[in-house]
Each structure stands twice: as C-alpha cells, then as structure tokens.
Length: 108
Image (cartoon, rainbow, N blue to C red; front, side, top):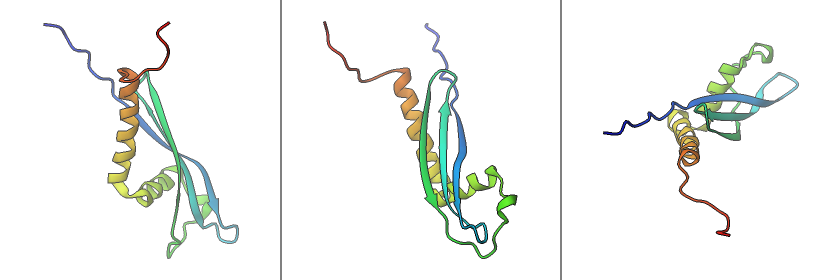
C-alpha cells in the first residue's frame, strides 16, 4: 500500500499595508490590507481595502496596533465567514499550484 504524503499546512498572515485617517482627530476611515498564504513551498496573496464607520469613542491614532486594526478590518469585511472565504480562495490557489488542472503552451 502506497503511503500518501500529508498536505502541508497553510499559514495565513494578515497585515495592514496602509491606513487613511483624518488629520484633525486621527479617525481611521480606510484600511488597506494584505493576506498572504504560504505552505512552505507555494504561496498566494490578496490585497484589499475596507472602510470604517466613525465609532462613538476614538482610540488615539498613536495607540493603534496592527493586531487591533486587523481585527477591525476582518470585522468590517464580514467577520469570520468572510475571513474564511478569503482564506479558502487562497488555499484553492495553492492547491492548484500543487496539482495544476490547467496548463498553457504548445505541443512542439
């Protein structure tokens, strides 16, 4: 019986590439984010932007952390369901790289 090779675990990394804010009070109204997926051999990525509604209480701009803004970004995108959808699309991209179902070229 042939042994099957386990599928590598894909690691997803959410980062904030840029923020847009009001200079007067530091209100962050747009987050530009990246999501990188990597299984150690193959990788895929996504980039997007999402807007925020003004909260009742602002956290000072200097006190913001990337983890906090990533959580806001994911929530504004649609929460866990949308995060899972984005990550599933990246995982599908990596699966296609592992075992391609399409190719291009010429036979000569």
